[in-house]
Length: 626
Image 1 (cartoon, rainbow, N blue to C red):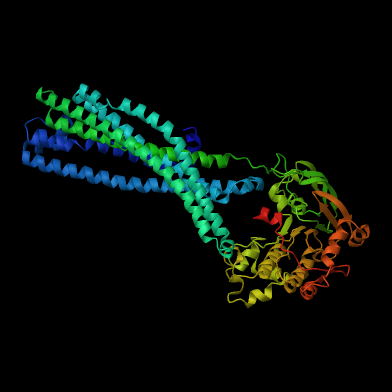
Image 2: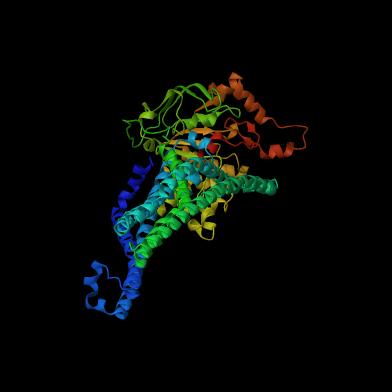
């Protein structure tokens, strides 16, 4: 219940619905108190000769003298009470549904927004399916708790009223009717302490099931390519069977507890009935009054008989709230400093000063990185796989923060710049183009949401994408499908370039943007990138040296350190790592059956050297962007 104050904050915007629901709850409790009284009048005043209860006499007036008329009036009154009560329940259901769904939407929105603010290091450690489970399925826990409290409040009000009325009829019987409550209270405490860990286990297992589904759907092409459908199905079945066993164990315990509660309430009802009949024989109670008491006892015991389900559902909501608030309470590692400032349009001077960075579980991913990039300068970043190239540039938009050292933008520490403002100064073109499932125009417009259609088309022309878009049946309104599956790799990449054109940021990061496309399309994209890089500070990561065209300087990384830097000519003259990479990539086997194909796919570097076709390398920066 420590989460209750936080839950009530989500109730505040719907205070009018909450007040209405509370008022309706009080009225429903009143109707529950009045419900048995028509039956009492029929038994005592129509079938027998007991006087009509005093408060009813002024209402009936002269009709109270004739038993047939009295019977008709009482029956009609009972029906009217039932009708009004049911109508009130329908109205209350409508109010509570509006209240509940509004709270769910607000809570889910907060979870979704907070999940996007969390650092990539957090997302690296968490499976996507678990996060989806927390956002989508735990969001109703807050409203569920409030909705559970309202019936409990109604039951409490009804219980107090029933006990008071029963006490006025027969005090010993009233006390006896509540004799089972202490036993149930102790039983509930024992039950809750043991069911909560099992419910937490069930939630974790069910969340894991969703993670497996999400992963399988995301990797469906790999699964089909390797014919691993049965393997994935077996993995899902094994995990699902474990979740089912855990859920069955919880259900068995809930059922056993229900049996105990039902036995206890049956014993309480038997005691009330026995002592009530004894009171009638002694003349202390009428048959109609006993019916009222028994009706009240049934109304009290009914929620007690379903207490195992009530407690179980409440415990599940508590566990769900715990998971949801754990997500909300996770502090983003990357966030604005207290006095961070916004920048409008930077010149693009970037300086790394003694930057070190280490991923969790790895040592010295980057070590002692120091260099500077002047505004408009094109910086190539090369090196063997795992050298830290993508990590180097992922620190610039603060996807991660360095463990030590400083990165400056136009002389200002980027940690003193507001995060949104910083990232608005940087455009990304990644190895694998990531597109949303909307139209082509919507994907290009993602670079600037308030762009006009003319702006979108101009960006597409600059990216050499306009012609192929216009040739599609629906042009710019063509849906690309999930992850752009409806387009070729080169077409997707040109849309990504158009998106970067539209953003028009002064700093550009290119992470092997042509590594997964053919040579002819590569030339088209490189031509567009040449225009995109013009006047922008550009960092271009490349595995193939030939794709870095007209660099002002090249940084050569190895094992997290900058081992060389300079122009192409200077680096070749050094005879170091860059020269060895160049020699490896420009060798054309003379005695190989693939020699003609290698020569066919070879391209020419800026200095006139040939370079072999691209290897299929997946960039860590691309994984970060995902």
